[in-house]
Length: 189
Image (tube, rainbow, N blue to C red; front, side, top):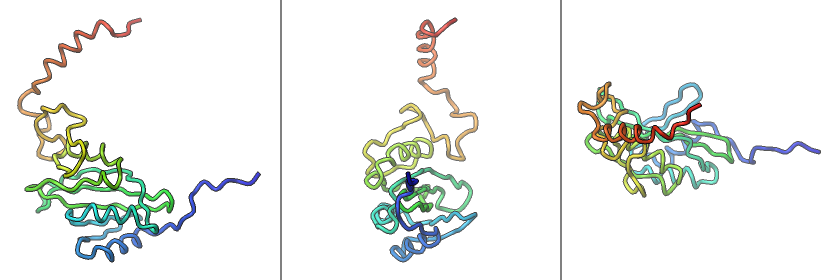
């Protein structure tokens, strides 16, 4: 029996080659291309993020069909823009990857949702909204995913108090009461 080739057939591109293709297609949108330890980051303006992502997803030579991760970064203390939304993209067919960074200002912490491109962005965008307060315009269900709806502030912002909010969360007493109430159902040996 012959060994089965696990990898899909395709042409793996070098990350800098992919970055150049992005720059050729969207010359006004690309702000910076950086390489560090064989990883390439392409920093873009946020205005056409969906167009850029759609191109990366749909172009048969690129075919970035897998959004590995989407996260926020807070650059508190540096000049504007304060935030970045970082997209780690991978092509299963071609086995290549790229990192996109979209700059988001503190005055307007919003960017278009990429859920229409990758349905898996749904959870990632909600988490980024919950932790950083970055609004994803056009998201089908943008609400907190880790913290209660009435939580104040965004814990991964660098100006968030280290010990949490000044006042105790209003739902804390209710949680303690529920824990006590359901304590009788705990497994005991």
